[in-house]
Length: 304
Image 1 (cartoon, helix red, strand yellow):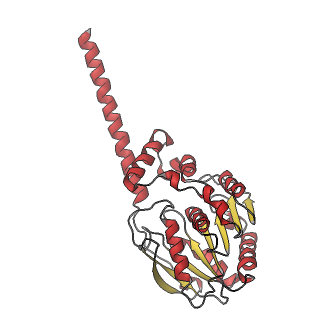
Image 2 (cartoon, helix red, strand yellow):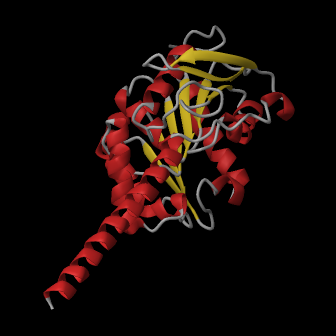
């Protein structure tokens, strides 16, 4: 009887150890793929969209070299475009075309650290990327074609959350901010989209992946919370756009951001649109709203 019990206990312990190993191994592999994606090569450029451009490089706030494109517009107003997770600057070409051809504005689009042609090996989901945006701002202010007091920022998905945090860090830095499909906090994004991003069930893998990622980067997910910084954007005008059918980042996260923000602010929720899908569903209205917003707050702004 005692022998049978001991054997059963040993089998249970070995099973637990084996399961723990498998869970940890899967979680570690997932962390590596999340934090260290391959640098996707560029296959398109503004020239293919009928826009003049210059390939540029500039430092982030921590010195990481970022690479991008500068598109000179007719006016002295300019907009920094920021892309989403696991994409690069070429994903923003439709938005650049909109701003340049319809708005006449200059555009700076660049690769966040660790993606595209920029330096770096680790994505930090917004923590260090906000310094990338502020580095882009500092560079743009050196361009003779641009009035430093007429610079806006517009981001998609992760880039939207980063734009909010960068603007919340310095509310005098930008003349206008547009966020398309942002998340309210990194913890909220993990809660809503972990399975869609990784293919793994949120439980039990989510908490393990978060802890291993925090250990590897030395950061905490609680340090990436746009909802805590969005109020600091005021008095800079803010426009938040979100699709009501967004399954990756539910629109309630943008509603939470809007409620936390101070005036002046606008929220546009788009029926039938999924993640960063508002422009696809309602292109004419989308472009009219965004162009009018930037022209109202950048073109009509006193020279800086």
